[in-house]
Image 1 (cartoon, helix red, strand yellow):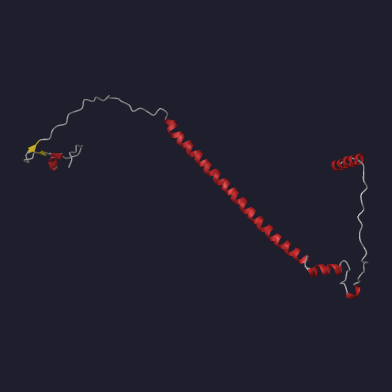
Image 2: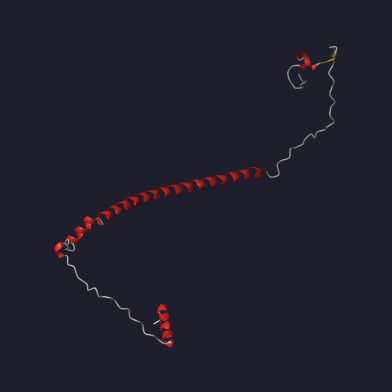
Length: 172
């Protein structure tokens, strides 16, 4: 055990055998006294106060307040965006339902039976009977003729070109 010097209520040499140094022959050798240091202390030495005691407290407090304000601001933005997203989701659901209803209405109005019913009741049309079909005979000699364009002069072609440009530009 190491030598301990303290201000206890008992004398250490009386209770600790390790306090005494023994030679190799186990003979008692009194402990050697340690030299006293020559350090002199001032009687009324004061501890130096921090240069800026408020800065040591205020800077971390301000940083903590700024961080807390940022966190609160982010939470406010998150809650606002969440509310907006849920509102948009509800609107999307409503519009999808409306789209489904409109597609069903379109399908019912464009069905063949709906078109036939509209033609008969509203327009007064009837279905075609075989007796109403007439065939028309066309003579075999019917041939169309291509009409040749008249040859125009050089100045007439330029005039037509300018008229086309004016018509394109919307002049006159």
